[in-house]
Amino acid sequence: MVAAALTATVEQRVELERMAASTSLPHRAVIQARGLLWACDGIANDEIGRRCGVDSDAVRRWRSRFSEEGIAGVGKIAKGRGRKPSLPAGTVAEVLRLTREELPADGSTQWSTRTMAARVGVGKDSVAKIWADHNLQPWKVKTFKVSNDPHFEEKLVDVVGLYMNPPARAVVFSFDEKTQCQALDRTQPSLPMKPGRAGTMTHDYKRHGTIDLFAAMNVATGEVLTDLRKGHTGADVLRFFKQIDASVPRGLAVHVVLDNLSAHSTPEIKKWLAHKDRRRWHLHPTPTSSSWLNLIERWFKELTDKRLRRGVFTSVADLTEAITTWAAHWNANPTPFIWKATAEDIITKVRRGRETLNHLNSQTEH
Image 1 (cartoon, rainbow, N blue to C red):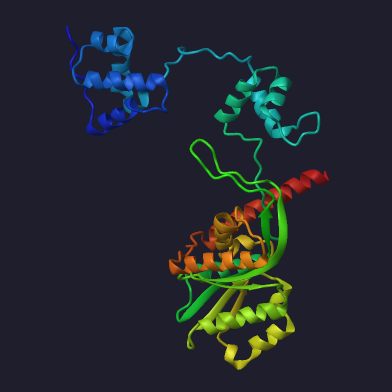
Image 2: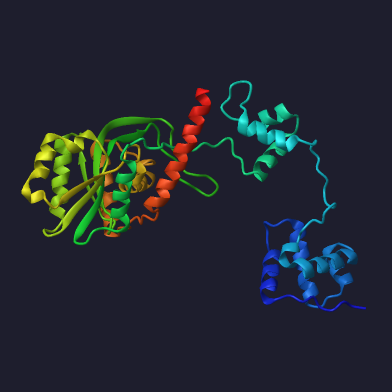
């Protein structure tokens, strides 16, 4: 007797076809998906077993599990079956404990698979699998800094409000300086990229001087005003402020997001801003240790990644021309950066970070 065709919905068949063609799923899941598709077509269990390299009883178990659990049962290993654990009892828990709570005896700042394997007495591949199964990456570290600005929340709400709900009849700029841009030349010629080999660049370089880049991004359009100066004194900042002022039509307010650099509040700048013609100007300082809040930093990253890091510059004039040309191309088709995180979400994360730091500090003190 031949079993009736397996019943499956259209969505289930689509998912089975995806699984059967997968190159990343476990082999058993791919084979079972193929067998179940044949069962849906009415192929006999014996024939499905022959095609899949299993006996007909295995095919019957696949069908039964699919009827009970649907797609979730495809490739599932039944309780008590499958490969038995090869690690001694408690090994996984010990690896996880050591990874999170202790450091190697030689004073290293993190574990490697080999040092952990030597400590626990298992193979390095077993350690790697345990880390992967529990999403642990001890070789990685992320930097952070929680602002201690007493007016953090007030400044944050102000700046994020400008990004997400800018005032009417106003232009919002994100302004900062990228200081000490270096004109770096390589000590030897680079080799071009070719199939099977990346391009090359020497690790060492020759310095040919530096230049300071002033930049202000129009948050609404993504256009960026730039100026290159030999320094970043109050006089240099004032010159750039005048450039911003000249770019904004009369009748529109000017809102500028900027950091707390002392050069931004020199007497000459205060005097210039106090003039009645600058009543339309409004400065919005970011909290200390919060450069991530200034959108122009994202544009600086684009400039660094796409033009400066791998560039070769034989003089400051060469570097100046490169930056000017790249910025001009950007402004020909500007892309604004859209801020999405609300002030409430950021404040919640910062408070959670402060609570964690306070907890760690209290543990250290005791």
